[in-house]
Structure formats: structure tokens, C-alpha cells
Image 1 (cartoon, one colour):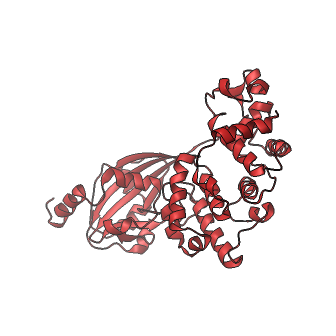
Image 2 (cartoon, rainbow, N blue to C red):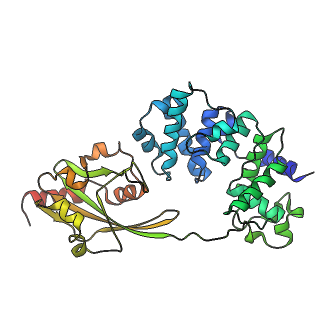
Image 3 (cartoon, helix red, strand yellow):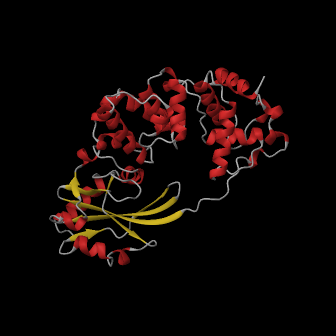
Amino acid sequence: MNFTQQIINWYEANKRDLPWRHTDDPYKIWLSEIILQQTRVNQGTAYYLRFVELFPTIKHLAEATEKQVLKVWQGLGYYSRARNLHKTAHHIHFHLNGVFPQTFESIRELFGVGDYTAAAISSIVYHEAHAVVDGNVYRLLSRYFGVDAAIDTSIGKRKFASLANSIIDVNRPGVFNQAMMEFGAIQCKPQNPDCSICPVMSACVGYRENRVSEYPVKSKTVNQRNRFFNFLVIHGSDGMYIRKRTDKDIWKNLYEPPMIESDNAIDFSELIKTVEWKRFFNGVEYVADENPLLLNHALTHQQIQAQFWSIQVKGVINPASLNNCFTVSEIVIDDYPIHRLFEKFLEKTSLFRFELLIWIVIFEHNLI
């Protein structure tokens, strides 16, 4: 029995019962593949079910607002996926008469779709023989065949794509692709795989040469960027000030308090000397807690050290001076899509509750 058949046999005996494996609807397969980019299955499943419930068809997703889509996506990260998801649904519904593209090439042209996603959809739904190559497949192929080409180089990517396409089951390409990904996720795991129960162990180069942990090969390590964010949690009589991120940076189109980025961690005496602080609070009466809440947040290529400074103001701040911030109440804030770091802050502080009420009473009654 050859490698391909062994992997498929293993898959049919061990595959997980996942909701998108019970449909051939291209919309739902596409939705699952976008969600599972950079996301573990156990986390992505709940989001998939929520999307299908709220947006059961591509028409429903297309007619939703981006704000609604981002809110449902909240907490999943890599928010460009959600924006592209919404943009693609709009394109298919309004420009393609609601008909999902039916070939690898046409699927590949959609927003946010690369070779991997196009291969997955076209093989699973339309039975086109295009091999999927993701992290799980890289790991399995590199170990089994002993491929030393670096997976983060153009040459390496082409080599693995060629290898995967040379062994694909042309009669069941969708099953083959799902089998390869599942085997890599469950059996040929990144750390401490149980090679003793692996059905292809005897012919595995990595196992025979005791090099399993060395595969797949990468040519370089990714340097993390350290960033320092100072969030100004400003409370006024109408609620808390928030703004929408619109720059070409992380968390685009998500909401957060006004923020001052610094080159390193700063204390309150340094914060109030910044140009932004002076612009925000020029002519405004305020009381600030000089002891911020500290939170660290890790992204793939960035390490963020955040300080949340609580500030109570009297009167109204000019929205223009706060980069067009606006106020929201506790009831309304849940309607806005926010990034995970801000969400962690809200979880830590129980926004608008006991401590805030004390601040307001003290400030408004001039008890300090």
C-alpha cells in the first residue's frame, strides 16, 4: 500500500467530526477555510457555528455591515481575514449574481484567498486535483520524504507544492487534502509525535534517521517588534471615549480608547509631556490615576506592552483633539468590535462599575 492510500485510510478511521465536513456548500467550506487560517480547529469551530447561525448564506453576509462582521469575528485575531471575508461576500453577491466561483483559478482571484485556500475549496467542493500545502502538510512531507528545502523560501514552497501534487489522489482530491492536513494536525504533530503508532513510520526518513524534530526546515527566525502603547481611558459625563483605528496597522477598523505610542515604557510624568497629551487635555479639567493597569499582549510578530491610564474629565473634550473619538456607555460598548487587548482590559477592570463610580462621586463633588 502506498503512502497516499495509507494516509487516506488513517483519515477515514480517525477523522474528527467537524461541522463543515457535513456540507458541500462552497460558501460554508470557504467560510471554514478562512476562519481556520492561523487558527486552531477547537477555537475556530465556535466562530464557524456563530457565523453560519448569523449569516446562513452568502447573501446574509454580503448585506451585513463590516462593523457587524468584525464584532462576530472579535477575539479571533488577524482581522484582515474578516474584512476580506465581508468584501468577498459582497463581490460574489452583487457582482457574480450570488454564484460562488467554481474553479481553482477563479477562486484564487477572491479577496484573501491564496493557493492553499483555493486548493482546499476547489478540491473539496468541485473535486479539482490541486494539493493543499499548509503547515501540517509541510511537516508531514518533510519528515516522511526527508525534504531539507526551507519552507519559508520560494524554492522550498515550489518543491513542496510539486511533491504534494505528485502524490494527490486524483479521484478523491478533497479527501486526500483533508487527510493530509488531519494527519499532520493529530498524528504528525509539531512536538513529540507518537511515531510508534504511525502507519507510515517504517518508510519515514525523519524517523529512520532520528531527525523528526529537525523538520520542517526554516531558513530564518522571525524578529519580534516591541511596542509600547499608552491607552487613555477617559471617562466623561456621557461615558468613555473610544475611537476607530483607521491606520494601516494592526486592528484596522476596530475600536479602542485614544492611544499614545511611545518608544519605551514611560511613567505619568513623561506621559503628560507628550504632544498628544497636551493636545488632548488643553484647557480641560481632569483627574488622572497615575498608576496604570499594565497588560502584555503577544502577536505573531509583535510584543505589546500596554499601560491603561484612567482619567476622569469635567465637561466635554473637543473630538477633533482626540482624533475624532466619541463617548459610549456600558450598554452600547458591546455593540462595537474591539481588539483582544482592550477586551482584556475590560475584563480586568469591570468597566463603569464600583471604582469608576467612586471616581465620579469624588470628582463631581470636589472631595479632593
